[in-house]
Amino acid sequence: MPVAVLVAFALVASASASYGGSRASVRATSTSRALRSFTAIPSLTRAKCGHNSLSKSSSSQGRSVSARATTLSQDELKRMVGYKSIDDYVTSGMVVGLGTGSTAAMAVERLGQLWKSGEIKDIVAIPTSERTREQAESYGIPLATLDTHPDLDVAIDGADEVDPDLNLVKGGGGALLREKMVEARAKKFIVIVDESKMTDALGPGFPVPVEITPFCHEHTRRAIEQLPALQGAAKAVLRMGSSQNNQPDGDNIAITDNGNYIVDLFFDKPVPDAPKLAQELIDTVGVVEHGLFIGMTDAVIIAGSDGISVKEA
Image 1 (tube, one colour):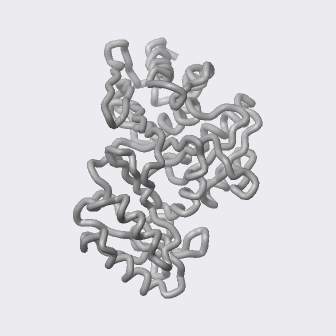
Image 2: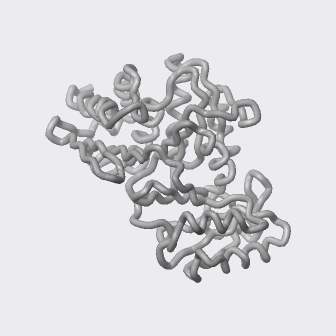
């Protein structure tokens, strides 16, 4: 493997140790793990990084560390950010929340590799969906639920939108209830996304999902659409077909892992007040949970055309 490639990824891994405090603590093995993970991503040998291409900036909204990379596919970037989340935030003996989605699946993949190799031991993982459970089981990762392990050291998951305050829209894949239940119990919630998910405001870029009870679901849908916080800015649409995406792909009502329905809120302008909307939604009788994750995020690891960056709350 070319020396330049080793230097590039070592800088990305070691840089995360510099962005501050216990919230960004990185164990000594993180860099070596990151280097070994290159063998699983052959095309990452195109990554380039020099001392002058590594930059650090800080603002009231967080700090970021970035490294230059070139011509990486979206799947390669997702793998990099998923692997980094495990390498930087998971150690032996932890209880770990495993998210749902294509980016979160890369984190599960990395955890499975380290579990199988024996580099991580004595962990317990709590999956947020049936498909994540199946993936984790394929690696032999020990699994549990909140019933036996109500307190998590860390949870790692993707997001559909991230605003400048690190508030999120989640649940495009239909797992919002289990995701929020698990991630609300974590000491650290680490979000992993590609740069397309970063937005100036929540709403227009991705519908906000709301999980509701099947009983009188049309009544609940109408009640949601008429909430004062929406100010008439959204249309509430019952999800049809598969619960794992918000595009109609069947004639039957989509059913979640919990046996509920989903209403997607499609916005034509930004959510006027996301925290207010979150409260009004959860106060609505018939609503089980919503996909607004307000004030929960500890750090976002972002995969982009310029490489990887980390932004802290």
